[in-house]
Image (cartoon, rainbow, N blue to C red; front, top):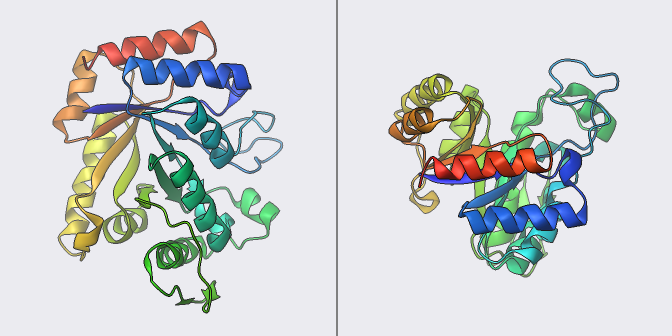
Length: 274
């Protein structure tokens, strides 16, 4: 089982010097990946289910990952997640391709449908149809990345008579979320599923994923569905083993805190799988 780290594009870790230091540390310790989170805006004052206070600093994930790409050479990079229906898919497809090229093919686009209605209102996107937009935007981006003559006609996005280069080398997409709709999206449109939870919650979500897979057609072009989980349980050797026994391909840690505390979490966690 591989390890990744998430959330180091927030809080005290966002300065150029600290980002450079942490990215070098994460890579040198042997972590496989670095995932950046996203919220364009947060409700103020904070209301449930907002994940952070409104004054929590949070770098744009694609900009932050471009910086990390420049100071690392092996570390895989991912968005965990981009709130896809809030983005223009044609513009995002170009950004993904650019980051993929500049990172040497190390980028995975993690996407989700989102869940904060005030955030959708602030960017002028209807909240009710976010799932349908997410599905359509994925299909539109894949058309731009893979079709010899890109064209797409949908409810929310349409284009023809255009092309966009460079094309990404991998164009991998990870799907976040644990609803039935998100799990079906992972099965039909994702190279990976990006979940979150304890071992018990992960076991329940994987059971649901298996149930849905029995009635869902998956394209061979997507390959085997990789299982990536952001751990919410306190990690020790036995808990790490629980995730591994469930068939998790990559366990992603969210260190929190700052400075030496983050370093200690990173060093302790990598030691649990070595």
